[in-house]
Amino acid sequence: MTEADFMSIGEPAEEETEATEETTETAETAEETENPDGEETEETEETTEEQTEEEGEQPPAPPQIDPDEARRRAEAFRQRMDYDREVRNVLGKVNPYNGQVIQTVEDFEAYRQAHNQAQQRANTSNLFERIQQGTASPEEFDSYVQNIVRQQMSSSPDIQRVKLAADKAERAERQAKLDSGRSRMQADIDALNKEFPDCGIKTVEDIKDTAMIGYLRQGLTVADAYYLTHRKEITAKQQAAAKQAVINQTAGKAHLKTTSGQAAEEMGVTEEMIDAFRPFYPKATRAELVKMCKRYGNL
Image 1 (cartoon, rainbow, N blue to C red):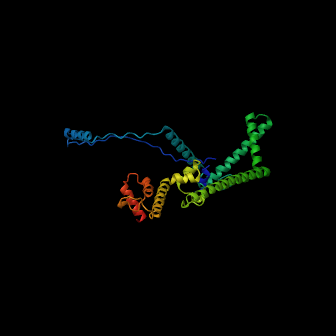
Image 2: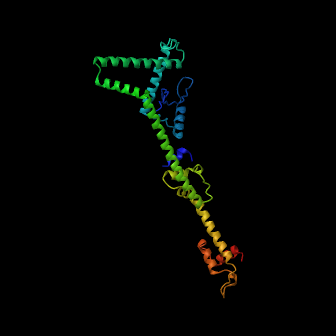
Image 3: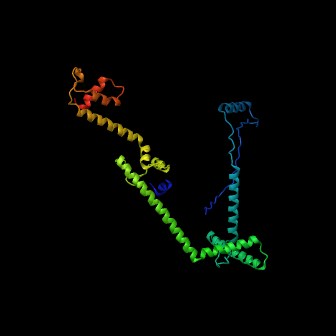
């Protein structure tokens, strides 16, 4: 059992989709046979119509296109075209932030990142000036203060230590829960081996049957999950063991004397021996049960 299976008992990535315009056209075509003078013969036309009716040909239905999917693909295609246009416009030009010529897409990404950072700094500086002048709106002032607080928190050594301590405590708690769960499950496995010594499960890692894992996820104990997963084999083994016990018991009583007046074919077979076999073969006759007692008891 993997850790994910065991634990189950108890910023999104951006996807860039390259879309292409899809055009579906449906056309019906028919072969036309013309005579040398350019006139269509009636015989050919009748033959074509008869073949079409016999074959039951129907024009293909146009594919169903989801409007939302079509809009999404169109928007992705437009964004891709805008991106390619931006790249083409700056290729061969000098990046003012590092002095290098933009030659590849990677160079363009470096330029765009530096440009966005510079633009953000300029906007922040402009906002700060308007705050000092008293011309900034309350919303802009709140946004500025929140950005300052986030920057200070991300760079503060004290905040970093607290964050590291919280992460460490969370990992320790998760590991403690994992260890506690493993201990409880190991105790269940030990109890399972006492009841089914040949189960083949000694540790948590030995639980690999998907059906058994499914039962454990539902909250069942290891023993219950094992029984439900292997109930057919367990039942068959129990029945075989019970039959063997009766056979051994019959063989052990074969030396007992029979009652007087017993038929010759039942010599050596007691009523107790016959009754022991009857639950396993309810439709068998007395004579058949006697034969079984003699065969298994070596009489």
